[in-house]
Image (cartoon, rainbow, N blue to C red; front, side, top):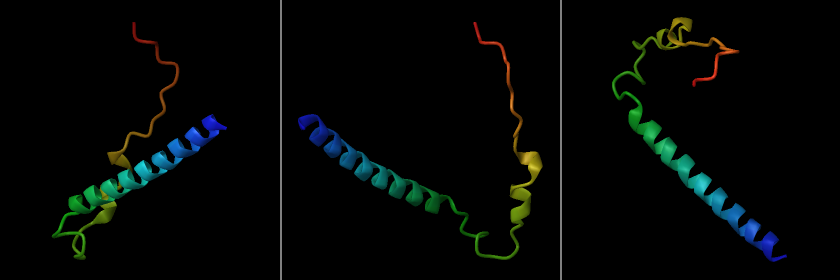
Length: 66
């Protein structure tokens, strides 16, 4: 019973820490938004997500580094 109680307490602490970390990430993301382009219509969002910007290849069977 003591172990169950301790795990419940630890779970509650982890949930609170997760909530705090999510809030911190949201604040950091809000600070990174460009102030001059995000509301105007002259920013081309499609260029930021073109397929040439991302490496989506999957590499299997690579040798293990010695």
